[in-house]
Length: 399
Image (cartoon, rainbow, N blue to C red; front, side):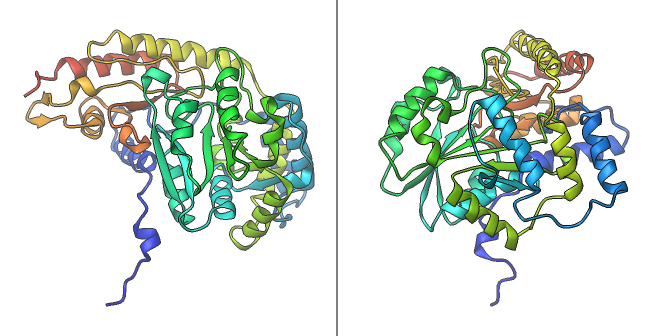
């Protein structure tokens, strides 16, 4: 019997964040008063200068194909950004622009991984990492990290899982979904392990790099310059510049890796939107840092409020715009005639009964928690806290 779908596609899971957001949007269309805390999207507008640059590109007819790696002007702007903001020196040929923040990561795994290679992936993780790794033929090696280490991998745990098959380790700072940020000392400890393994790549996902609330974001190669030749940085414009729909991201990599990714991309999607690239050049001229302070205030309202709800424990995130509270105290309780058996049933009932949309932690490899996006207005955060409290107080004792 002929199969209609490949084993490769059948082996991947759909994005839980996207499917839950789709359900939320259906309920909104039905007229329900939904507070959407499930989608990973800032409630900002793109910089006006970026929007105008995009409009000007259309008006002036700058809408044709660009090189697969992106406009040289954009790549030069990214080089300046990385030098000014991260203290890292790159050349334009080491920068590859791609369609959004997901594609750079997909490209990286395709470029460096062979069948049955291993990629070390600290958990909780962004939902698409394991599936992208599997699509490359590699094997995700999940390393569970909990609240005791603020959801960050330790050098001891990292060393334990390195094998001759290890091809890469993924480090996400700030982290989605936990908001954890690696300190300089923590990165130094990880670097001390990795410096002894010359064949292991470090994939540093820095998509939330500007959203750090205490201290500052640091890239591993700044501490260990000798690791720069096997560090691949991925970033994009979706979160920091609120350009989610513009679909523009990039990698900064060693020259041979960048060249390979450009070649791969030329046969896959080609270059990202030309219009978005011109907008991106303008966006890189400045980031509105006042929003970091605003998001910090929203974080404090949400996390402090969550920790006042009996049965919920929430570590305060130091970056990104997510809280990741532990709701496992409610597993086994009843809402009317329905039992909450896990984070998924908790989230679905919270959406149905109180119209608050959250993402179950199972999507991120942590079944005890849920993810809440605090990049929404403060009055909605306050209302969401009331609804969550109303929901949990209606739960009957464990059966």
